[in-house]
Image (cartoon, rainbow, N blue to C red; front, side):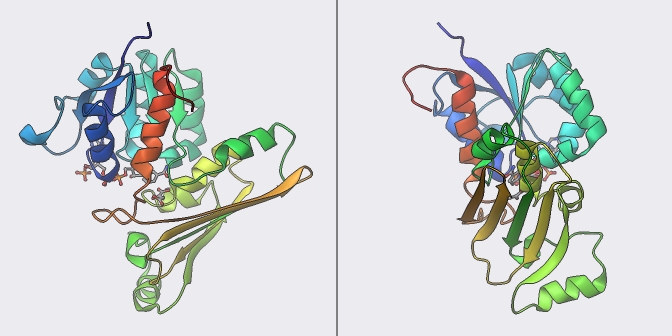
Amino acid sequence: MTRTLAVGLVGWGAIGRVVGTALAQQGVRGAELACIVDNRPLGDAAPAPQVSFEDAIERSDLIVEAAGQGVVREWGERVLTAGTDLLVASTGALTDEELAKKLLAAGPGRVYFTGGAVGGLDLLQAVRSLGPLDEVSLTTTKLPSTLEQPWMDAELLERMRAASGPVEVMSGTARDVPVKFPKSTNVAASVALAVGDLDAVRVRVVADPAAERTRHVIEASGPHGAYRFEVAHRPDPANPATSQVVPYAVLRSLSALARRSGQIL
Ligand SMILES: NC(=O)C1=CN([C@@H]2O[C@H](COP(=O)(O)OP(=O)(O)OC[C@H]3O[C@@H](n4cnc5c(N)ncnc54)[C@H](OP(=O)(O)O)[C@@H]3O)[C@@H](O)[C@H]2O)C=CC1
Ligand SMILES: O=C([O-])CC(=O)C(=O)O
């Protein structure tokens, strides 16, 4: 019989709370919540012991990162070297090629990433096997407040705050954009992971005061076909930078990793 997967959860925020609560309620067959790591003391309400990162690595078969790109940078290699697997939500960290190389070389733990807020990545990964795509683009549209960044100048911030319609706040590639919006455009890095090329993915980030739904549009074309995936998610009420669906994408990834029979995935 397959052993129950002990999951260490890093980040008790919009994503982590939903994932941790579901795991603690046996919501994923074959997986259990072993422990939680978070910056803040969680008190008695936490459904599993709050521990240090070092302890979490010891106690877990797999660490779910739902905290931020810095955690992948700081801890990724140590997790894998200890033989613990890592499921990454903050895929933007992997735009740092030095880090990505280190993680690829590290082991015996394995790295996985969750599709998070976007779909179609499995198909893009399949298409990539046929050869490179000619064009890949992602347009992300969010509420202006979720896109404000410390590096923005006063003029741009004012334009975003006063906007009555869509304002383009950055265009670039999947190499440069996720670093500039570390909590808001990990999806650009996820698309790049799927197509295997950071520079090939053109990214536009748009602030729109009417964006009650966070919208991500992926368009791609190549010699074998043309592809378009569009999603419009309700933002998480407590953290509108994150779409409400994201923890459920993490739970889906965990179901696959727990490798239990009795489900068709
Ligand atoms: N792939 C995708 O589609 C998506 C990916 N994401 C990624 O997931 C991350 C988490 O999202 P979300 O749950 O909404 O964020 P939240 O800000 O709601 O929660 C993050 C939690 O992690 C904690 N945390 C941050 N850094 C550390 C650390 N070094 N050690 C321990 N705890 C830490 C935070 O504490 P504190 O607030 O005190 O720092 C906070 O409690 C985002 O930053 C983003 O990178 C998000 C949405 C979509
Ligand atoms: O949740 C979303 O819609 C996307 C997001 O924040 C990210 O990619 O970091």
